[in-house]
Image (cartoon, rainbow, N blue to C red; front, side, top):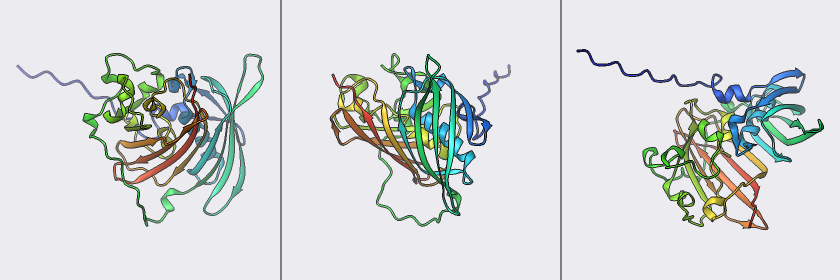
Length: 287
């Protein structure tokens, strides 16, 4: 009797043809003006994730500017974005041979129909493929266990407190040494490390790196603070185009004071290259 055929595996999504690409796609209404329906699939509780929003504005600027790759992008989060219609307006500040600079803002309407600015960014774009190969660094890839020895939301007996729709769209495997908060025993160190990818298998590119730096649980959890930690400002530096394969993300906080903390993130690719760095200021709701 012949053996039963194995179930076919789902095809891996590709850059340009994935849920992330569809959910960050914009429709040009006029030069520099774009419409988008922010997907509820990238929410944390009810608010849209800041990294997803940054990727949306990053895609708009890639279309508006003569260069397509973000080199540095700084965002100020003014009000919490909600799933639904939004408009992005861009402005070209300067164009040059190596770098072009632009700014962009995302707007939504409130219950009374008034337009509210949600996020404003200033960014410089260039061509990552034109950068020289010379690298001189003291930075080292984060050391944490292989992916099979790390844990994701699916490994717990119940959904992690504060889990959200975005978790279903990510491949996150957290370093066990940064998971004390999930067991009620936070380390107090303010560290979070994880293997990162998109759940549909799409490889990373510069735009998805904007998501990666803001996709892990907050370091505040390991300090012993639970609840929402909204981003006030986030600056990301894209250093090179990532190699195919999962990313390693390491985030640290050294100083929580006055109800605010910083998060410094590094993103490393499968070729052991530091492909992105970021720093954000976030607000912590104490008590």
